[in-house]
Every structure is written in C-alpha cells, then in structure tokens.
Length: 178
Image 1 (cartoon, rainbow, N blue to C red):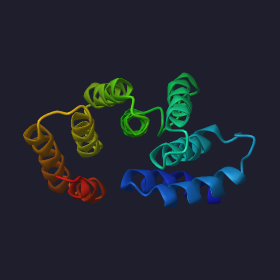
Image 2 (image 1 turned 45 degrees about the horizontal axis):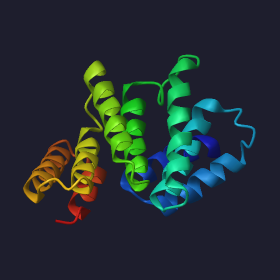
Image 3 (image 1 turned 120 degrees about the horizontal axis):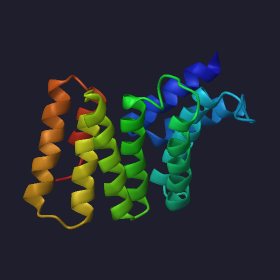
C-alpha cells in the first residue's frame, strides 16, 4: 500500500516544487521495491528521484538523462494508466524540462517542453498547461529573453493556473522572481 501512496505523493511533491519531500517519499517507496518489479508505480518514484536530484544540483544532467530514458521506455510497455498517458507524459516531460534547465541545457529543456505540449495537444487535456507555461518562462529567462516576455509568460501561467484552480502551479508561478 505504501508503494501506491509513494507514487502519487512524490509526484505531487515534484509538481509542487518540493524537492525534499519528493526525495523522502520516493526513497521510502523505492526501498520497498528495490528490484523495480512494480514498474507502473515504481516509475513515478524513480522519476521523482531524478527530478529531486536534478533540481537540487546533484548531477542534474545525469538525473535528466535517466528520467528521459524512463519516460521514453514507459509508453513502450504494456498499456496502463498514468505515466504512459496524456497526463503522465505531459507532466513528466514538463518536469524533465525543469531537470534539463537545472543542468543548464536549455535546448534539451525546450525540447522536453515541446514534447509536453505535443502530449497536451494530441489528447486535448490541458491539466499541466500552467506548469508548462511557468517552465517556459524560466527557459526564456535563462536564455536572456526580454524581461517583458518572461513576465508575460509567467503571468499567463499564473492566470491560467488560477482560472483552472491548479493551485500548485499558481503557487509556483507566484514564486518566479520578477
């Protein structure tokens, strides 16, 4: 039962931007399945570990590469809900973009966000859109885009997240420095 809890709790922590909680939860859940026999639930935990390591500066490029491998392999496996679906792919490709951003690899970050947008567009579900806009604003800022462009993208992320009651994403958008 803790594996189920850990899969969703570590994902929620990553979406909230809480690396410490994502790390604690994912480590606890992964310890119960060290052989990775619960691929469906274990994927969330391993992706959250990658995300937490990347955003805390612990080998961001290596963590992002491992996350990319996990995401790429997920849809090839047997059909299941979550990671290999529209929401899982859009969410985790968005968080992969954040990992590449932490590694300073802006082209890879933008490419991951493009794949996330594609997943949203393909399936018509836009749940993670506020997060993706926020991450786009961060990539724009890292690339030296004009402050007005970055601010407009961040404000759009905040407005969209607020409108859709995506409070985690709205909170993260508010934290983006001017």
